[in-house]
Image 1 (cartoon, rainbow, N blue to C red):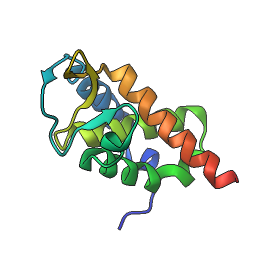
Image 2 (cartoon, helix red, strand yellow):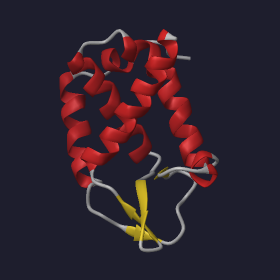
Image 3 (cartoon, rainbow, N blue to C red):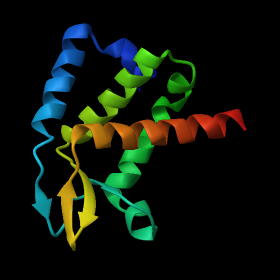
Image 4 (tube, rainbow, N blue to C red):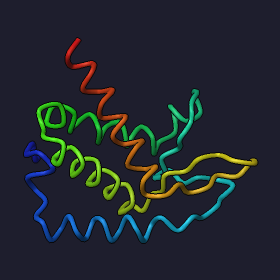
Length: 126
C-alpha cells in the first residue's frame, strides 16, 4: 500500500490534468438514483451509509495526517486529488434538490473534500 502523500505523487503536469478533469465533470447532470460511486452531499443516515460516501471517507482518512502538516498549496492538491479519484471511479458529487440528485460543480466538490479533511485533521489534534 502506498503511504506516500498524494501531493508528492502528483507532478505539475498531472495536477493540471486534474484541473481539466474537474472542469469536465462540472457539467451538471441530474439523476433520480445515485450510483455506488457517487458522493452524496447532505446530512443524515442515508448519506452516511451510502457506499460512495463510505469510500470517500476512507480515501479522506488515508490523507488526513498528511493534510494536517501540509502547506496551503499542498492541501489544495490533496483535495483536488481526492475529487479526481472519485471522478475516475466514475463517481459524482451529488446534492438533492427538488427530489432529484444534481451534480455539484467542481468548486463545491472541493469544498466538501477540504471540509472532510479539516474535520479529520481536527480530530487528530484532540
